[in-house]
Image (tube, rainbow, N blue to C red; front, side):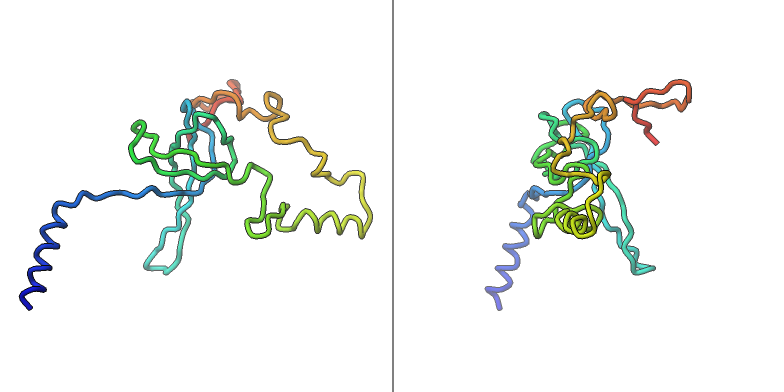
Length: 178
């Protein structure tokens, strides 16, 4: 019995001297417009449990991640990793990889491309079965994302926060903070 008490006391004394180490965590989120240079603003969805209703509700947290190569664009699903030390007051994570570019969703289990809950292969087989239409969208002929930069897609331009809501002052590069 004496040996056990000594062991408990030594663990308690040693625990007081241990510095808490925080492990690196990975999060999955969606990139939203950001005015910071070399950084991306990521919206991470978390489930918040309500003990009274016994239900989970969506709660969103915005995290700034270091992205010097500008790999992620608005709408991309990205994987971010926490940094061992903050780069700035806001930047606490770094972009590891772009998992899904906007509009190009891949099923993680089969590796097949998906459109609105159906595989692209099945859509093409259905089209062959019922007859191809001229107006049918051809995914294999479609250009990669970024072909409309400067015309319809302004994700490559520098954005800034717009605090006035004047309809006469239209600027596609402004981000409304509300």
